[in-house]
Image (tube, rainbow, N blue to C red):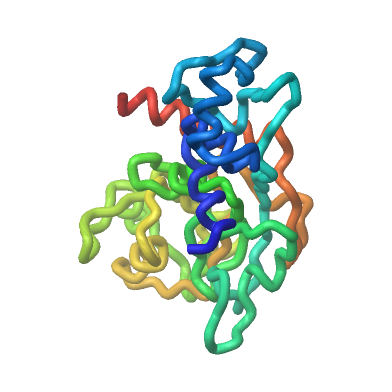
Length: 257
């Protein structure tokens, strides 16, 4: 792991020891920073901090040394991509196939939040905020994912009910929170909402019921959609959208506390 990767990993933590934060900001060694802290030269949010072992939140706290602000040169990026078909959800591909990173070109390194199959289109988030990415993909988060599935044949009402009640897969039962036929599609297109992130989950659910998916699009993720973003294009998330995602994580933390 190189120095940049180490810095990114540590900044993804919720808090950092103050002496380590100062070291990452280039102030000096941790031992030297301990001396600065004890001398009263370091303030956090305007308050002198002399206690060794004190912690700071890199994303919220303002740290100064001898009155001068210091901070680690790092920023979190949050990106929404409308993934096209035949695009791999990986950082790189040894077979030379197009990856999502070929579409999203930014100076900072970002990583996909979860995965979409090569032939699945739609919303995909990318970020370098490791805490948020982990929270959004953790099974306990139960993040809402909405899909539009185009089937080879029309689906019956009984099978829609089975999707809602749950179907038994090899790795356990799975069910849709919502499943409805899209009007005007001869019952061949279904809107489906799930709260799990198992591999190929939607495809396996339909396959279990005897249906083949011809086209699958993820139209929503955690309340976000690709509205206004053409296929293969991307945009940065708005601050309100970032706060929305973080609020979902905060709610889950309180729920499981």
